[in-house]
Image (cartoon, rainbow, N blue to C red):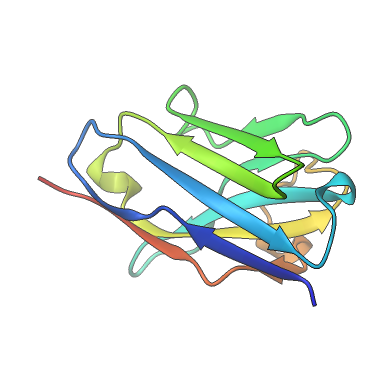
Length: 126
């Protein structure tokens, strides 16, 4: 059974850091692109970042470039999202999701992803 499970969310002050984890089970990361999305109350889900399977190419939304870093540990079947210099506008539920092979230029389209985790809450507040 293919599953994704996020962890690492929490409450952090502006300027702080968090590292989210997305643990995969039931499939190999070698044939999967993993994306991170977020959804704030009253807003649409937005693509934040993605990492492709074979070449580990990465993609970032403009609002997180230079602050967030996506990486993966294939042995642990886990994808990470390191979030630094967090801002109140980063507050949201963060989800990871799986699509085949490559992120591509349309990595931000949620409809391209087949499997989703249940999300982890990130709150940035003083």
